[in-house]
Image 1: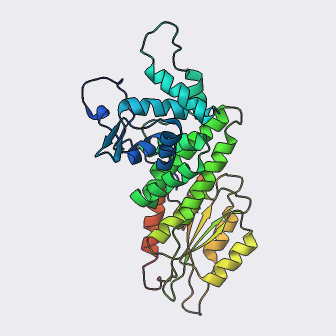
Image 2 (image 1 turned 180 degrees about the vertical axis):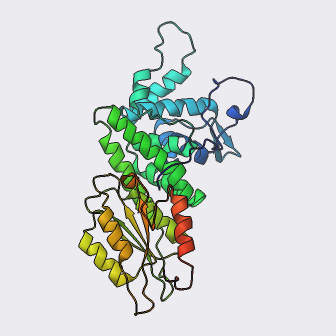
Image 3 (image 1 turned 90 degrees about the horizontal axis):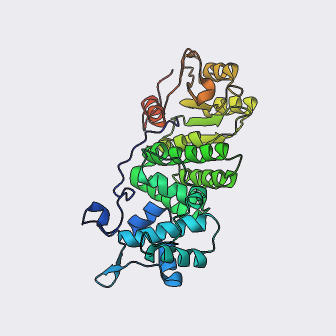
Length: 343
């Protein structure tokens, strides 16, 4: 349920052309909001840098609204690269201005610091939404307010499913690759990003379902700590108005079985990230659990999520490949406003 669908159709792409070219779409001044999304900082940060360090827009429409030119953007990109490597903001602002003001090709002018740019968290992100790049930059800078704002904006603009599959997952994967390839560096970046992703996904509050309608139970199998995918599913179900009960990480088998018997859920989603945690006997036990009066006994629909369940298909259990597939299955199995049919 975590496979992203990478896209690259953001309204403002990375500027590839150098400043000074004839007017085209790359030369159109950006608003503060658009620039903030592009750089992965909050609009408040941009206004603060303008006020404190004089790094502001060259164009102010009607004397009030800020419009940032390609030259302004180049200065701010340099500022972001430098602050990401630990350079104090005041010093970074001065260096960014000097780099932008230096005419190209002057002998003795140092070239851009490629190593510093790379260390700034130039995560491998190609063919993805523009929001992924801004989110990655903000995460590498450990800019928590910007990360929170970007994630909240993505959920509000696209909804949970698209925000998860096309913004959150590609960025999380890029951070994970950076961590693995850099000898366990950037662990703090992954932790910060994961925390804020979880926070953004928990904002939608699952509703109270209609009387008699069993909720969807979501749980990680015993020993499994990876909860973000089922948190995304929980948020997606809330967005559809379907009731859930989220039990989170590493739910003991006895506790899970007791919850299923007490709740009489319409469906149970079991998440296993690794083959070592996926328990087929537990999944079969949950699928065989019955409740209700004699003659009208019911069982839950069981969905197996995560790569831990790879292998031959299990009879009577579904393995949705993406969040969207899981939502479609659970919506069909949980008619809104009426009890589900016996399974």
